[in-house]
Image 1 (cartoon, rainbow, N blue to C red):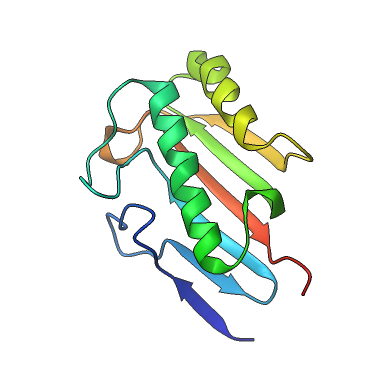
Image 2: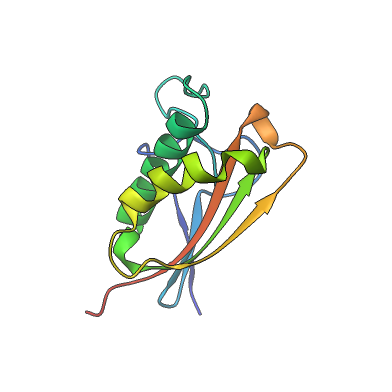
Length: 129
């Protein structure tokens, strides 16, 4: 099976030795994304809501570059530094997944790279051709 690396300017470049996403078969595996602005390469200001918004925009751009969209997301994992931010994150998240939201796991963690407050990993399928 062919493995394709997905790279796009619509999301921040990786801050380590990993790809923004990998497409294999009918699946797209997006690496954990954070609220880093792709133009400035800095974390967006404004707290958990702003970071969640930018994170989901980054994922959206990666999925579009891979030929799919958030509508085809089947699974996400959300990592929160402060589990008390769950409600604020969830309010933003709900705006991006309005119909048939993917399965999701949310995990509280001690810290994230780049001092992020949230990181989201996403798996999606390619649309039927």
